[in-house]
Image (cartoon, rainbow, N blue to C red):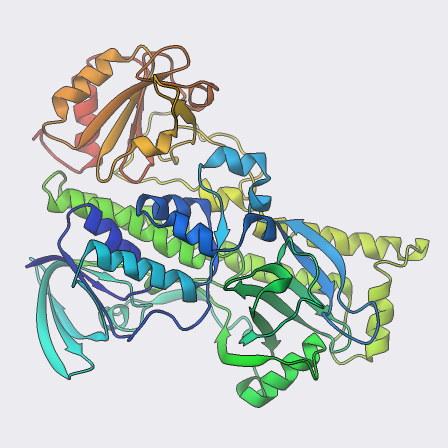
Length: 585
């Protein structure tokens, strides 16, 4: 019997496979698709995701192939792209985005990894290659789950090898549904709840040299207001070899009303694309046109017995904010160590009950934020007062008020600038991306209040309170070598970080390490196994020199102690509680 069957070979499934491989969990991944995504789809990879991908040994490849940091510092707003006058393509708004390409001190202080950008069409082959390297012969594309049944001990699945028509049976203790909700969730009767069909979008993936029109190499996403049509469009460079204005490929999103038949006709969409961008005769090649509707939905449950839902099978987001793929990868990071702990007899199966209460609130908020980000673009567009169906010159007169410098236009220009500044709720939602917290039976609270945050969307405030992500800090060893505190957490193992006077905690951890996967280290500014030269860890740890923090394998703080009283008993009790164990092993 396998430990785990993974159904689906996208971001969630491939990440789960890689993580389970590193944790020594026997598994098989099947995907009904013949290959990885042929669509650019999601492209922004946030800091939390890059930490996970760094653990898997592929972050450097992703950074090398992704957008250079200096070419993803901003999002820009423009009056169209190209046209007969100099006003076409004029920029009228700019917002720092995702840590400003490494220039933001707050983002640099949050993690040793920076945000990056790589389209899913190019990311997934990297994930797949690494998954195959870690689990040879266990990553099977073109293999489709056709039926499955569950019982008290596991899951029995029938898989069709689509190329040959051969079917085979798989028996596994657990099944991970990473199939976008196409098969597993539907058969279990899982209901997706939330807002649907908020807008209809046609997305065009194309190749063209737009360097003569798309200026500002530091801008990643271009939001186009189109006075000549009264509509709008969004442009994102797709590389692959150059980025910014020199990108060889682009994705352009066009909005259509739900009852507009033009959006269903490829030729009409291609014509609308040329009109929107002002490129009537410019050479371009359309690779693919896809259609989708903006929705924000969350599954009514993330677990059904021995089946767990991850990624799009559990939650689907508008692309605004780039939270969908990142949430999927982070689902896998939350669940994988728990499965390994149970399968390796380090935890009771009750630990698996914490997956839904931890991930569902986080992803539900991500879905809500994605919808709010999408709707806020409507507010920004309305502030510009460009009217669909109006005479183009009327729209242009209105748009030129943004840069006229006339006193009578000052309030209008100010209102538009303020609306654009509000888009920091999408491009600088640092606490949403990185500062989310967990509350479940796998977290032991210490009675301290949640830190006050004047802006819980934009401001991430590091702290080592139970339930919070492990704060980033640069540490030094006795040879002066620098390393991030995150690197001390080893795959599938807990880490006890004691203060400089926490010798008793470390001795207790050494005794308990025979029963649980547990490491320990002392960290202090002047003394310890590792030094905290900038006092960053000392500032965030929330305890004195003799206290300690227990970190889970997914780098979330699970427990914190202020004093070393009866250390072995305290630590043992905390681990038992986190791992769902009724008695000491």
